[in-house]
Length: 304
Length: 304
Image (tube, rainbow over all chains, first blue to last red; front, side, top):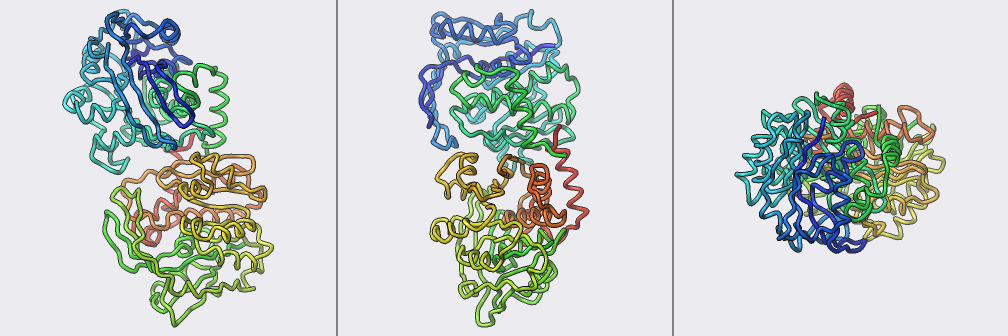
């Protein structure tokens, strides 16, 4: 089995209470692959510009099963995003977004990616691009889409068309409220859950996560952290770890207990990612660290 | 074993997105006893005025092991509180507070309450009253204090003195931040955790709860609800159910797994309380309903 994933490969400038970083490696696809790579190296579809830097490219390659689907646009710069978090990390202000290479991106899913059974992750990205990838990925076992406020507000029709083609959505709590005009999370999930869906995953930041299946609800707390440094990409890391768990364990039947275990694993992996800037939180750990923290999380949150 | 509890018996006027109620039975002690009563009827210390009404008094008596410690001030009215919740229940505006009988309350803990081993709960109330009850309750096995913004801001010295005399605190997340000037929940808990403490319980509303012991952290999600009607008293209900679990099971050693089970039980009991106004959410259920929802919660949140 394999994971095919499309999303952004970006340079980010980030300000938090813990400090600032300029033009560090980021993007939804980068964080997804970084978190997935402990169990399964995804096959990537994306675009980079001329200013990514060799170290960043080597890093992305090391986390990928293949980068054949990544286009290099030598005339363009990388997608760039600048954001500032409030001191309590509850608010995020986007200072600047430059689409750059992203604006000219026409995704192509290489045939080599589709040789074995695959699951498909459409990371947070223009729904038009998500649709194009969906059109080239018939026969995928599970198709999950992430999105954000910007596309919900400005690209609703395209987003709705993309949603018609997937098996589930992964979304932040506030975005779920925005998408459904609901204020209750259970009602929002019900409204999002289309008849064709297998799963709805709602990320609640420090409030943990909730997952809705056709016949179950799962609710899990976040892993309690003493220090948060940079929450950027935590949701993408959750997604990457979650999908890698399904892929690694060759899950074909998305039942409550399996999904719960995948979510516990994803909760723990995502917790490392916010402990340092950009990809650094996960760069410095091993599978052993993840297992140890899973054990710790079990002590804190598991009950009979 | 027994529970002695002091707090307010009040009349509340409440406005929420689901409707409004005028002068219904409320108060921290009422909600505490209401939630505790499924496992253990607490011995109450409090004050009521001349406008409580016979039905409300009968209700309170039915939830209490004894009301000998409740003073009736016939010249005064009951403590009165009026509040309005925002549509998403995230904000609460206090419209009016009238201390009434409460202003003249001099608590007396009857000797009859202290015949057997007891645990003591100081519900949200003036810390001066909490101190007076503490002074009359030497030898209690476990003393837990609840408090709120108002006392943290306006009665800090008295509150600190009361905190010197207890084994633990039960507090809302925002109040924990206010008390400690921290913005991270783990750091706030560490700062609150005095050397003499056995436990710190932090209620996070729809974000669940966290409990800190000398050598453990517990984190649990809230029970996911389709409808919320009135969150008033949910924290007191959590406290009442939590303490009743410890009392009912004769817990003397506050270890991780026992505390976790008490918190799971309290999470479920508190979830019923917010489904209707005032005491009604718990009035209409039985122990069987609680057990069924505990089973449901286990399916949603328990993992191995």
